[in-house]
Structures are given as C-alpha cells and as structure tokens.
Image (tube, rainbow, N blue to C red; front, side, top):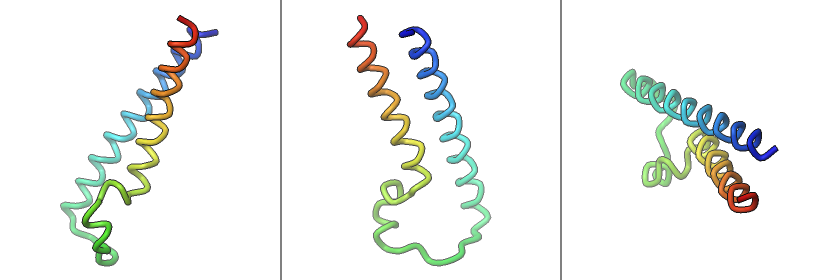
Length: 77
C-alpha cells in the first residue's frame, strides 16, 4: 500500500510540475502579445505571484503533495 501511495504521489508531482511549466510558458508568450483587458491593480503589481490564483493553484497542491509524501515516508519507515 505504501509503495502505491508513493508512486501515485510522484505521478501527481510530475503532473503539477509539467502543468506549471506549461502555464508559465503560455503566460510569457501571451505577455509578449501585449493583449491586456484592463490595467493591473497596484497591489498585484507589487506581488505578482502571491495574487495570481493560477500560480497558487499549482503551488499549493504541490506543497501539499510534498507534505503528504514526507509524512508517509516518516510514518512507514
């Protein structure tokens, strides 16, 4: 059971990393096209990654997966 959980955790992390890299590249590509709907608020300009929900949607599950992997590794070994 622990091996299956570990393998699935690795797969989830790989998917999250690949999706994050893809999103980052797509965002940079669209940035060069300079098609903006509205001006960006000043708070978002000061902290562009903290207030980006797409970025947070990739980072938070990735961190959660790492915490679960470490917890399971320490618990079963």
